[in-house]
Image (cartoon, rainbow, N blue to C red; front, side):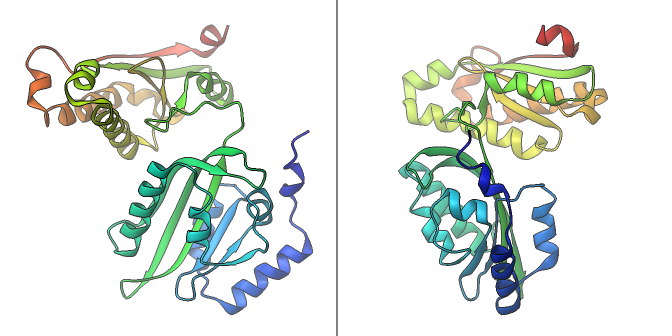
Length: 279
């Protein structure tokens, strides 16, 4: 039995605390509905002027908060991030939001729950401003199941998640774009593991930022990746594959040494029968 199943319910006391937050603090209905379109009840809503947040019961109970109304939630949440490299990325993103250089919060990292278990989450949010001043923030969490394997470098789901994605599609046909990056081993040897990891993540981040509405991206073995097209974009498989190739080539061009001897990426795209893949 999942010990968090009982967190799905919303009781009257939670509704009362939600009403209290709406009545007493800055609240933006449009921003909240943007978050609720994700169909997820692990949400948080923040009045940035008073630094007071409302968090859902599931978030409160799962991550050990005492109340649905939390002061300085961003810092309290930060304390639950165990990996210092993730803390740095989190701090940088929050700073960019405050300085009006970013409008959206969208990060993947591990967080310790109320039982000390490290869980992979996707944290997404949207900021609302008034006269360039941040006044309201709405966000949601997606909490991965224990069986989901996340690549710690790119923060992409690994190959064991691909079958789950294929099973969830309604179409009998699936669009797949597989690609393998070249010379990563050479970069690793000449410039170090950290440089190579950062270069790899810059590529997957760029692909995700540009095509997140059209594909789901997975890391397979080594430097091999698979993009599964969303059903409505099957007819666009060729231009999407070209776009992926162009994004990768552009980033490789920033390092002229890599291009001296060989091509940057090996890429193949095809539409396949879902039943044959899953059999």
